Image (cartoon, rainbow, N blue to C red; front, side):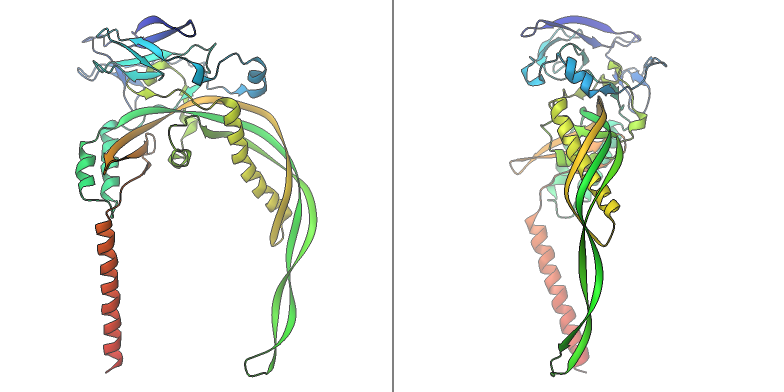
Amino acid sequence: MTDESVQSTTPQEGAQYTQQQYPCVSCGARLTFAPGTTALKCPYCGAEQQVARDPDREVNEHSYQQWLAGAQDKPVVQLAPHTVTCTGCGARTETDHISDLCPFCGAAVVVEQDADLVIVPEGVLPFGITASKAMDLFQSWVKSRWFAPNSLKTLAAREALEGTYLPYWTYDSDTHTSYWGQRGDYYYETETYKDAEGEEQTREVRRIRWTSVSGQVQRGFDDVLVSAVKRLPVEKVNKLEPWDLPAAVPYQPEYLAGYQTLRYEVEPPEGLERFQDIAQNQIERDCRDDIGGDQQRVSSMDTHWGSVTFKLLLLPVWLAAYRFDNQVWRVMINARTGEVIGDRPYSWVKIAAAVVAGLLLAAAIALLVMAVRGR
């Protein structure tokens, strides 16, 4: 693989890092990674260069305890932006992204992270959906929003999508949990009562008998995803799941060429807390299944988190941010599955018209029923 590398320095840290750009051997333009392939492609002449992969390299997990004991990296919020010099046009810009496009000539630039300062990605799930396919998905999504303003469809046709790799932590752990709670079992009693006429009647009434219980459950968690960015709403990002994580490949900077890649904003300890919150919900369900009965109460759980491992993955998303009615709306597309998640404005005129139409329909049905009964 032919590439151009430049050594640069982050002033506040004095750390060395390498920026890379990939020139086309045919015409000299900058190559970008082609979604759905294993190659970089020239956007001008169409020439391709395969991404050379090491067959012996794998996407590995890291022991959380070992990392915690020897961690030397600084919180990312304390790191200075990279000063990037484009080898295509010579422009110098600052960015805190791992990869981006030169704002002056559009050439793809990838920054190799300093492993002494930050955790570098272990794996990447390459883009699988092209920009044109993503635009089709975006516009279809807009057209399916029945109560969106009509002008939104015209606006969507003019918008551009930005290919972005989002950083995620994945966590693994073997858990062992002791729990305490109560098991509820239904039983029935015959109850005597008087009806409206004063006559004595009987009926079966359901009761519940609670019994104190305790026990233990075990569960292994593998590749639980935790978003490592704060600038995007977690509840929206989570809706992009599921991801085909088995298709992830060992990290190589070539996969990032032509795309924006965000640097992680959530540190591993914070990510671990989020993972444990997710896991505890599943563990509580396991406890309820173990308790059995008709109802369950879990009063407390004591979980041992064994063999905790983690890694940093980059997952591909097409992003669109558009302004409508003085507000910014965001749409995200899973660049592997095509799942579209987003916000949209509502047309209150359309909603009001639908309500009026519904009322008129109900009134028409009522009049028809009255006419039939009056015959």
